[in-house]
Image (tube, rainbow, N blue to C red):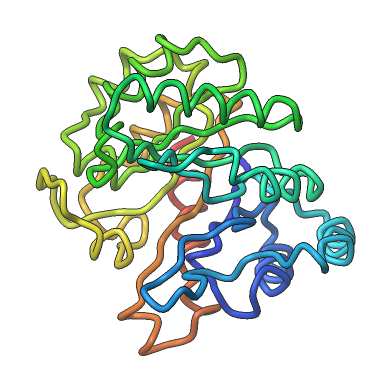
Length: 268
């Protein structure tokens, strides 16, 4: 069975250290966490972020629990912002042994988006990191699998890979048939969740934070996983704030892990 990582927004209890301990107890191999995070209207971090001052101690926690950092977030290409502002967070991600950085493309000027993504890839490469390009319906500069593949081919950066988030794939009109046409080698990681339908949308942010457990919706997840090459990392990303409020965050995360394992086992 494939190895699994757990995304931090699936289990926010205890911050990054709590995530590591939960992942180890659940028998997972990796986590996805934030070394940089968006801020809310009050200027506060939207998600728990690793404190640079405590990074050496946190790295020991990772080593003690034999947990790797699959993805470090969040490094979007934004209008009127240079990606060089991410250098401290990139350095921190590398210090923690992260495998890759995650980016979305919100810059809609094509040339500037390409220039900034190329620069992000170069900075990541200097730190021994990949860059995972996620397409979403609410990132105007890369809003579909086809957009991501085109950008990948145009830039030809050695450390750039594409992410396949199941919600983003199906909400932006992507299909398994389309995924079959993509070179498997350029897919870096996939994120598992489920959904109630195949409705096309470019405004599904609420749903992105209220996802269904794998196997409880209509997404063809087994078939999708079967298309992924062995090198592809699989990340359990199933936030659901409304349901978590009625139960326990760790219990919800455990259900997400079990559902994902069942999916992968049945899909063998």
